[in-house]
Amino acid sequence: MLIAAVFVPSPPLLVPELIGLAASETDDLRHAALDGARRIGDVDEWIVVGTGAEAADVPSHAVGTFRGFGADVRVSLGPAAVTTPGTPDADMPLAALVAGWLRERAAPGARAEVHVLARDTDPADCAQLGKTLRTHLDADTTRRGLLIVADGAATLTAKAPGALDERSAAVEESLRAALAAGDPHGLAAFDAGLCEEIALAGRAAWQVLAGAFTQPPSEATIEYSAAPYGVGYHVGIWRP
Picture 1 (cartoon, rainbow, N blue to C red):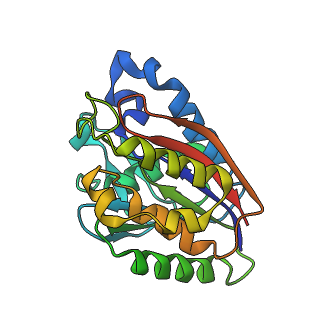
Picture 2 (cartoon, rainbow, N blue to C red; picture 1 turned 45 degrees about the vertical axis):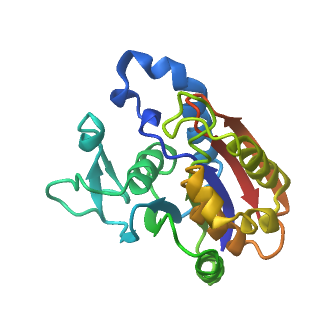
């Protein structure tokens, strides 16, 4: 059964070893993400949804490394008893790496199964995946958590990775408002074309969250919402 859905962003800067002395600049974001992951509760399984350049499924026995982001920080998606020995996957999708890093610190006894959607996935397909995942999450008495690994717009300031797009502030505020209000219809309404133009890379994952909540959550809370580097980052929780 679904215990809670938690959403966190996907920047590698969550991992202190990747940014060295600058780690203190992102302490608030890091602590919020870790606290959010812990709030999923004592679960046996995480179902993780993120986005990437192409679709991929990453099983709970996988092991990866952040080496491609600057440091050989290794992470696993499951307890030691179920992980696969050998060389860590340097090409593991970022959403899976972030999920593994959080899992090891917040729920080391849980296993995580990761679904990465292509960023241009059709909204209808996102909604259907959300419904399918919710059926699995509620299929039996196994305690499960849903983790959405998704960013907001990357065009919120002139120094943002995608530079400044004047349209992004309004869309980002709509995203924050929908997450804070527990409004799945608001998330489902995002225009895929506009989100692509303003580099709102997490759009598909946000719409999977909407599909998993055909009824609004009983509780919706945002723990962190800011754009420290011109990218929208949100941490919070929805409970069934």
